[in-house]
Picture 1: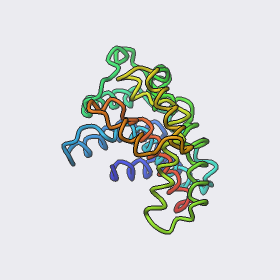
Picture 2 (picture 1 turned 45 degrees about the horizontal axis):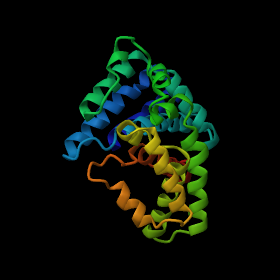
Picture 3 (picture 1 turned 90 degrees about the vertical axis):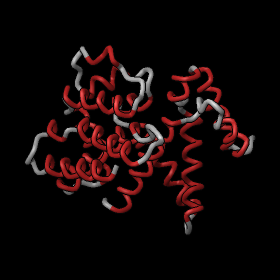
Picture 4 (picture 1 turned 30 degrees about the horizontal axis):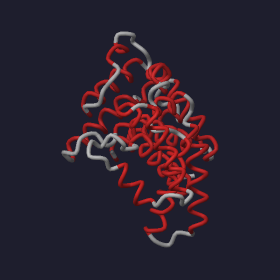
Length: 246
């Protein structure tokens, strides 16, 4: 994913310098490129489409902020502006990325020629990633990042194990509050809500994490909270940007 993320940051930087328009950042094109690169790197199927959808606009927003000399506080508004400046071509490229990743798409919407931002808005009711992108990523910025930072400060991480513990807690925290739509698409929202309840129990120590983990690893892989994983990846990305860039 690295080259696409880097290019998104660079184009955002150019937009900040007013050398290109926001619409020319091409978030859809960069998501497609990243998905193709991931596909060519392994044979495990789609693992990064949702992550790319979140990270590309974040990277572009970060590039813009660096060009303008802005602080981390300005990153979320910059990301929102990048998304609102999207085009119909961005949506077409996203459909191509969905096809490349072999994920069930939104074929009926292609004919409507929606911009990327509008496509996310109409898809928000059934997809958590689309909901995040259409509302300025509140879970990533307002829920996930503060909680992850608190975990990191509490753990005082001195090893990879400590960092992994903070990531796990953040994962369970987000899953407990927001039913995973990847599960809902396969097993229904009722089951997704049930899994969120068990995540809350695991976070509070009422059930052992290994027991919960075993349940999620069902033979059909239908209880995999993949959307939550994408969101947590974006949270870690934000944490890294805040610590090393801003």
